[in-house]
Length: 60
Image (tube, rainbow, N blue to C red; front, side):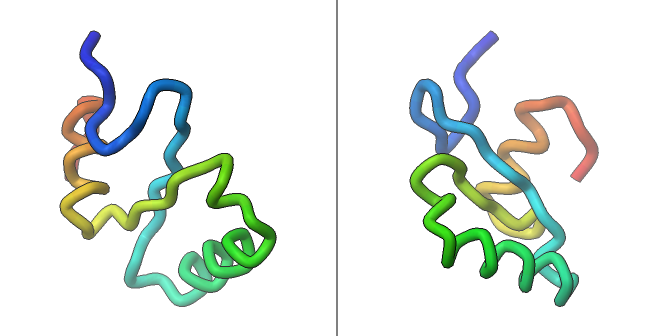
């Protein structure tokens, strides 16, 4: 299997609904706690999110 797009080896990604205010708030909460060092965040509406969904074989 190929490497996931936009991720380095060992990185994890969390995909979230970028339209959802609750989801955005939760991501902002996590980013303030410096989780961005451990996890990458991408909304499913972004090009990065869509590419990760395609890579995983999930519908956009």
